[in-house]
Length: 404
Length: 196
Image: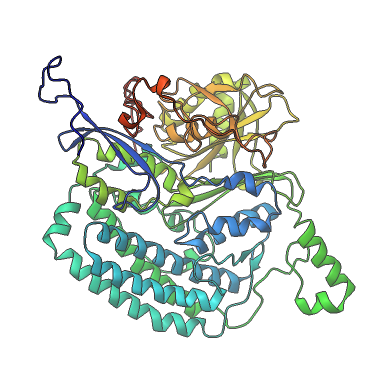
């Protein structure tokens, strides 16, 4: 070991009284995602903190301005990579609002089923990862096992487990498989059983409860002022859910509740996510009842939807149409639009500006994580250093979305 | 619903509202940049407006227009359930002078959104408590979301710190500077929070 670099003759050795600076992240084993928190500590109490993001910035908005409107779908997959289908649906709805088309009923139900499956996978990941960071590895495995079941369904439907790129303007890439409803009906009870087992292990655990309850509290007005949405806002008791307040797709025709918390602490956020997950299961089962087994999925508009492959190879009209759509992109009318859906973490907004060509002029995403991560600093100031881990975990910051 | 908000804006601020429209069902008002803060305060505080949540703030670049940039603000009212889009135009053709009042003291949630707009679009916000880059690193040159920033442009490498700059042997350097990225030396600010 090197000797301490102290010149005892010249300086008096005194007890350190200055606050200690600690650098947490950008890659810290107890925090998922790359975020850096620079802390000023007094003992173990956080005096000041500065949350720094941007380590996962990939120039999403700049990339979108280079391709066609359809080529944005793979990018939105990678924004919130634990619930990519919700992003696909959100973006598709935004472009459809600009094109003034509405997809057929069957597609709307289909989007709801896939979206709610993605929401289940999002909440399972968040709660499981938070438990794991607090040392509870077994419930994490339970939740990941349940998530695997969700992903199995999504894999059967879309062909990909994580980044589906399944949304299209005016429809979906493929119609639902015949097995979709049976898969959902079989998997959902098993998923809920696993959730319940994991919940039983966690919510009877003194350590887990002590580290969550009354930690990272925020009030409703404060959360609103910070632009929070989604489960984090609802944990404070404000029942704002885009699916209820401004229904899109068929959410006004299904029966579901909006779970809210009471005091906005970590425990509330944990419980709200568990509650939402059960509501999502309810929505999926109702949507399975209502979705027709046949009928069109894509809108009947050759200007935005690719023709069937059969036509592309046999007719000249189909070939030209296919060529124009792929090379130039669907022409989206001139204008600007803001469309918002309920993403995994809250209001997922897309502000699109079109100049009437096949390429977006501006694709602005309003990532729900961004303002939520902004509030992290307020939550942890004054708390203990170890409180960062559950607080950060319960906010469910997704780097890809937060950093664009 | 918020067509009423547009009417109220027009009657209260008159000339400051340049144009309004409700295309695609999104109520939009374009206002003068000078009245930005005043209008925002009215929208939050007036009981008939009650826009307590700032949903989004971003910038859009139109290089062929003067003023060149649009600052786009999306507002929502939890209690009234109505939305409004507010826009202001700033900046000359070169992109200089793109400056607008910060609304971080009206909705504290706009802090990071304004930092992001400053970072990526190069619009600066007067009175913002802590206007630094947020997604890019401090040494980044230019503003990547401007249309005249080429998408394939590469950035110069950031040189290592030398011992002369650091003032002590490099192996004795702490992994980060004492105030690196920290707003500790800056003004402490607590703004009034919106009431729900």
